[in-house]
Length: 161
Image (cartoon, rainbow, N blue to C red):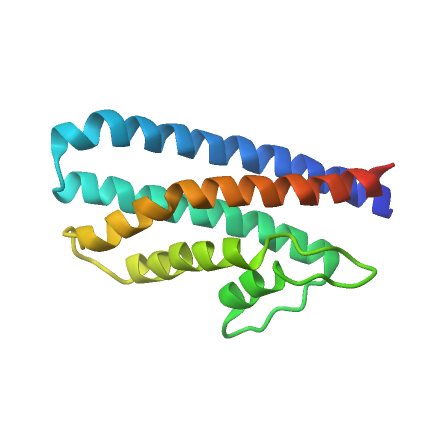
C-alpha cells in the first residue's frame, strides 16, 4: 500500500474514531446533566462514569495502535500500553510528527491508569474523589485531543495528496 493510500486509510480511521468519541462525549454530557443529579454519587452512577472513562480511553488507544502499525510498530511486549502512549508524543523525524502533545499524554495517562485499575477492580463502589478528579480533567482531554487530532489530520491530508 502506498503512503497516499495509507494516509487516506488513516484519515478514515480518524473519522470513524472521532464519531465514536463524539457519541461517548454526548452520552457523558447527557448523563452528567440529567441522570447524575437524579441518581447522586452512588453505585449506578459510579459504574456509568467509570465505563465512560474506560471506553473513551480504549477508543483513543485503538486509534493510536492503528497509527503505530503504519508508522513505527515497535512496542514493548510487557508495557505496550504506556509505550504506545509515549510514542504518540514523539516527533519521528522524516516519518511523522507527534500525534499528541505531552500535556495531552499526561491527561490520557490518567484515563489509562484508571482503566487498568478498573480492569482488576471487582467491586461496585467507586472512589468518588477519583471519579470527580477525572471529571474535572474531562474537558481538557476533549479540547487538547481535538486540537492534536486536527494537527495530525492536517499532516495526513498532506501525505494523501
